[in-house]
Image 1 (tube, rainbow, N blue to C red):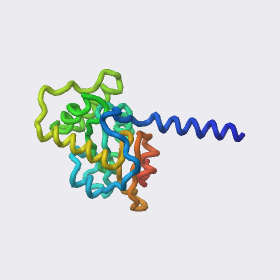
Image 2: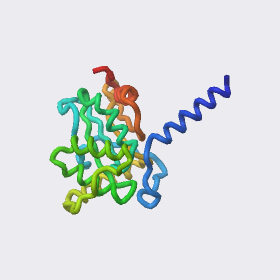
Image 3: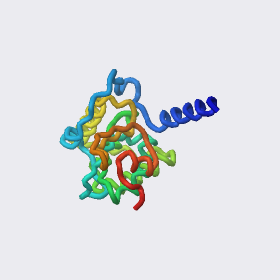
Image 4: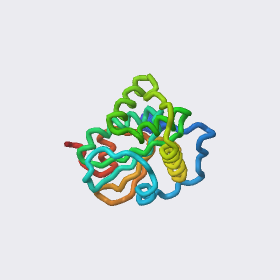
Length: 194
């Protein structure tokens, strides 16, 4: 019985480790401690695109890398909650050289929600996501770099990395890694049923 519990615990830890992407070793050194996150700082400094219930009192800020399949899974799992919650997706350039230009393309898109859906479907299908844009406006490139710097300042070790206030308790939560719709709703403090 005790061995079964240990095995289950080990499998759970392994699943959590596999549910997120980490940066290249030279892209973002791990911070020794996890600094507190500030929703106010994220809201005022991060540049992202908003999807979901625009009038929701609960906003979920999601730092993501366009090359991260776990971010793609979180995108898909968040879709049912977009009727209840406001999501701000904040592109970062963390994983490889495609990350920054793809993030810039998403940030500059006239319909970022449609482009993100297309991109994530391509990425999860193993075809690499959006083509790299021929040019990137300097201010958009700088915004993605600033998003990456802000993410690093929070000591994040993987993406997706999201921050929100729990709708029930008001507690600021931070989470690294993808999760299913029901677990995401529970962590944020909303009922997953539509």
